[in-house]
Length: 365
Image 1 (cartoon, helix red, strand yellow):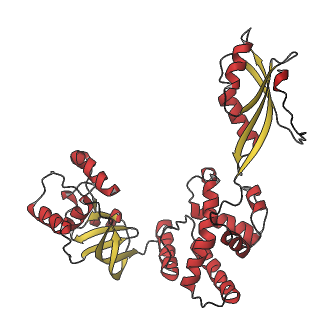
Image 2: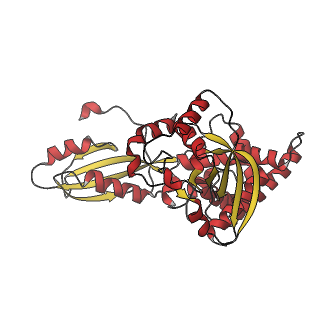
Image 3: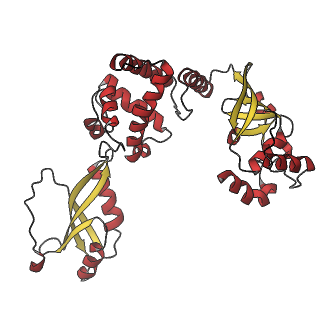
């Protein structure tokens, strides 16, 4: 349905969109290629990005560039609506992208109807060029063929797919000794994916940890966390509190996750408290007090006598990788110092805190 609306509302702008990619241009960028016949399979229409001979006929959404739909296109589209079965189209594959050798009109019709997949006979061209992109693609292809896992695991470093495969083989040995069931590598891979990989990546996502690692993927962070915590057990620069909450080995983590219907362990947020001394300009102290009191995160505001004008208490929530000083500093700079009338601030972060049971003292103020 999403593809349908994209195609529907993008139709009037076809003239301004570039053409689909040229297969010959893409192939020219590769060195000598090895050809592999994959036979017939279902291919995501989103991954079909170009054509061998008719790339100039379509814009980048596979609409006709002249906006004139041929009788052939209309008849194919109607036949698809009538559930007619078509023979597979023919595609060339270069890494994760597919190019049409035969079946341009069928692809255009399927895309216009919002279809997700199309049956195709796939011929893959694997480049002999030893660059990072090709090496990662070949490692990923081998990993997916061995494990039969979804192609959602995206890594950016060479050798990490082999690390995951070793982790799965280790998990297979555990399952064979811990269970009466029979497991092969692909069945163990599926169990690893469902009970270890997905829960840990969910924890990482909920913690917002990706923002600290630009140009890295959630799979990269899974490798980083699992390797440093379950294999190397070395000192870490990032996520120290996260590691304190994780079991010390992979299978203990799996058992813990199996006990939970919705893995939210560990708690990925931490509460922090600080005090801020504020000096204001002139005689507008009461107005500044009112403005500060409305700021979310400020729990107490006091107008005081002495070298400072206002004392506030703030309570903030941070994720496990951000530092207290970083979180508090950003809050004070953007939410407090930006208030008109605030002249200067000094922030105090407690090192050790002890709080007695509170009683209702609202009538004293």
